[in-house]
Amino acid sequence: MVEGGFVWRGGHIERVTRVEHVWEADGARPRAVSVEVSTDAGPPLHVRGTVISTVSVPVQPERRLRRHLAGRPWRLVLDESFTRYEGAGRTGFGIAERARR
Image (cartoon, rainbow, N blue to C red; front, side, top):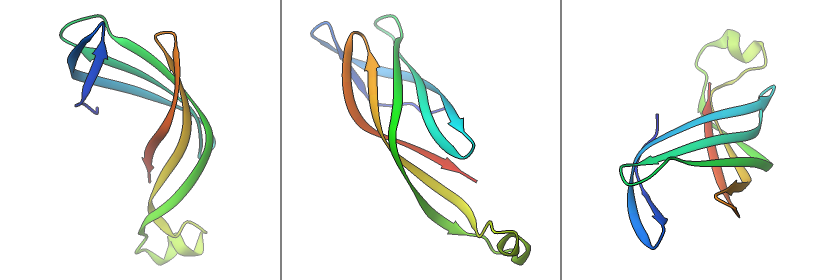
């Protein structure tokens, strides 16, 4: 679970109380993300993100030799995805990050 931040809605700022997300992937590559953002002041905001392009950044090397020999030398990889977001009748662009082991 991820939480924190603020939403500007109806001319007022609302503190985010909860964020839930679900990734859709094609193998190891992220394709889309569905996000639900909750506040105490109104109904949840539903946002859909469609991945346009992704850069996978190796973060933590694997220490076990067998993993290297199997072609999986990284223990942790961070996917940085340029994403088109759609929700509440609007469209925007930004980055979606996903860590995978």
